[in-house]
Length: 397
Image 1 (tube, helix red, strand yellow):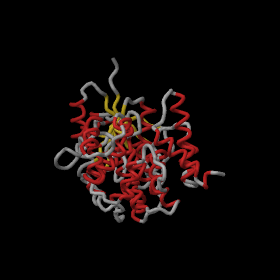
Image 2 (cartoon, helix red, strand yellow):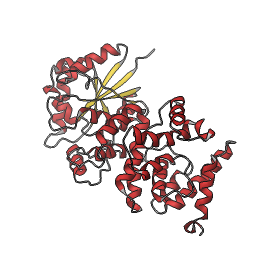
Image 3 (cartoon, helix red, strand yellow):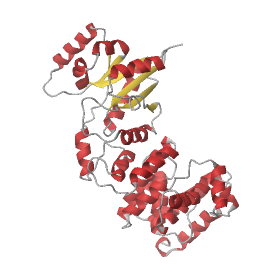
Image 4 (cartoon, one colour):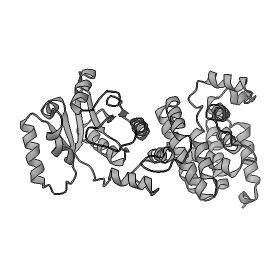
């Protein structure tokens, strides 16, 4: 049996961005890796003014949640004292004795290897995968000479072919502070930074630090990333349609706060607190998490705004008479950037910024067709919502 080939990407991830992910994808292809570990630094010996470790950890988890064979790893975060790559590689070799380790670096890092702690030992512990980067003031001949010197000391190097990704972490942090576009940050990471108030930006959600920690602890990584994506989309829809941005963001951040609870626990909360008496909803976690989530948003997260609580409660079935604010949260859940493709997704994404009502009608109609095709029926409240929406003057044309 061949050895498992594990890629290792260490870094401050301050914040994690598309350049990091592009390097990992290129390394996967070029070296035929089985998986790539992402290890945020705990106390980098050469960097200052970075976001708290747990914030960088959560952003890393969210960024790689949708990527097959990418895995976040806390090894460096949980080690006490200063973080050195040599210690990490020794620990990984002990943990994965039958695996072959590949450490991902750029050309700039190759030139700095000689400054790493115990770098000659590091050269014996892994194969380096080098993603080419132009280094200002350094010629290709100088890079080649340094590579040959390191090979002479026992180093092993592979090259990963990739399209250059022009990204500066410093520029990204400055853009976050100024609330400017950051196309090289995933929407989930951008949402985390904005809600939390990282990198000099004012926190948009007053209790974000506590709420994000709680959500991260109680949701799966994919659900946490989805939640951030929904908040990002809800805020955008609120801006498009003149709705309250902060309230939309809060409703979206908490819309799935009950999603990962066991069904029995959701049922106990619902029955004990008279959340719903609808038997069909009580028997379905896919439906019950919405009204139970509204109850938790009030009693576990301290939300008292009835508009926010109502939007959370009806984000799965909708309801006749739902407000445009409710619609924005409902649709944000359907169209968030990380949502896996489904037949109606492209058109719903196109319609939602233009008309919440028309996007709602189209979305529910396509869901009815899909469920009927599988021999299922939508909950009656969803069908009632559709009929109510179609009766509205703006949807009569």
